[in-house]
Length: 329
Image (cartoon, rainbow, N blue to C red; front, side):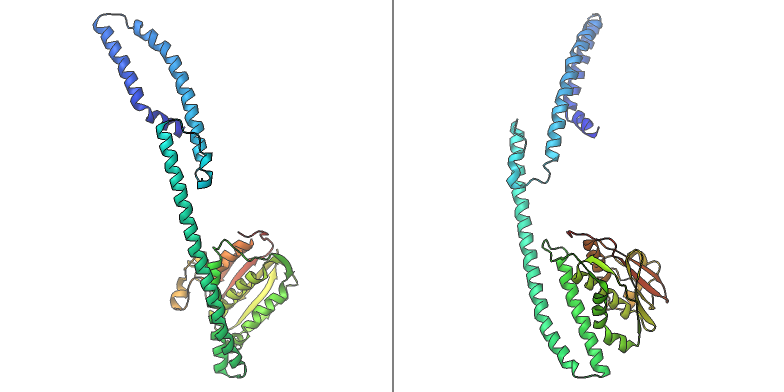
């Protein structure tokens, strides 16, 4: 219906001219005292072919409109698929569309090159920075003191920040290194927890790890990133008590802590990009990217993720591993 009104609007001048011509004829007949039926009858006869013309022409316009709608995302290579030019305006529009398609493709290629260069640079940077980190960690392994444990914890935090930067870039990359397969979840959880052993000891927090005895379908590397980010948050905002890891039905991995919790007004937005909430404003180190990246990774893998929290009692993050995506995009 919107297209029909647009069609009428486009031909409004012609319709007005036709009505005006009929009015002039009618006024002339009236001034000469001639019967109006002498013009009304021919006008009615002319209305039939006029309606037939309008219906036929509108059908043509509607068909061409549909053809152009189907070509909204046309590429320069597909320019030949455009409907044939039937007028000078059509030919001009076709040339403009072809030029715009070429320009859009060039912009897309340039953007992709810049993105690829950025990703390559940060990938190399990550691998380079991991070398001095590994060297410092080896040095600290020979010492077991509160200071060395604190430094090891800081190194682990640096590694996670470096990994976050790389994940942030890779999430929107057209290439991916997802390897979706079935594997046992418990060894993966134990490896993740081991990385935080120093922080558990330093903060004197207990770990309540209940074996899941589950096999899941996911990508090991990306799922480890999610689990480690959640554990990092739990340790950051838990001053005393414990961190618990267990499985609930239907195949939902839960990571619970007895930390400061999340304010009710912040809870719906904790997975938003850059949102830190009240806790983040109190802790100036918060970036608001950790849980955002977890949500993005889980979406790629087809897993659901949610949070339940009570202020001053703790937070529980739930990862639904019962669903998965075999072809992340």
